[in-house]
Image (cartoon, rainbow, N blue to C red):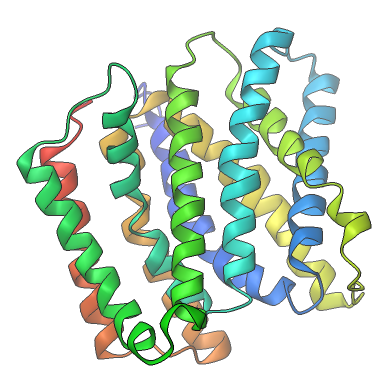
Length: 295
């Protein structure tokens, strides 16, 4: 099995499926000690800095300055904007609900791919899948939206996460289209450091203090090592070596992991409505995958 040319890629995919599912709970725990932008900036500055230092010690060659700049910009879109939206959203909604909202992200990936020059057009089947996935999200958002309008936390969290998903999808597509070769871990390190650097001003602009607790530090270190260094490096490997149809499969697994952990740790509600919405969202995403990208 280890001799299979894609063994490392599929091992990385398994890592993304599990560890990214746990980061939703990790972020919620960390937010008890860290202001949101502090958490994003410090997390990625540390993870990116550690990876860069380790690669330099091993003598791994980094790409040209042009490639490094483009890679860093993708990191700001994918990690900086995408993760900051998730982190802020988890101050308003449960972590398991955030994971379900992000499960809609393949819809944005396919839509953005159709909009960029040379992208694959949306088919009738793909648009049906998009409509089904949005309907599933509506089952979660609808009751709160009718009661509170746009002032409700659920609708605000949903919209924030969709903006983050669009940014994540755009950065991922640009990264796939940038053909200059680079070591996947080097790319991951540059992206993480760039994301942290971009939000570094938050350390000086956010007046809220950090609560230095063992739980807060421990959750930060978990996010650094397993969410960022292991999880995101694995994602870069998967993005470079496996088809889009496989890359986005983690969106089925991450919400399940997040829902189980959220229920166990915080007794987050996950009843019949959430299960029904998850089933509808997954069905919509499956239809999008069936009629969308083949590559």
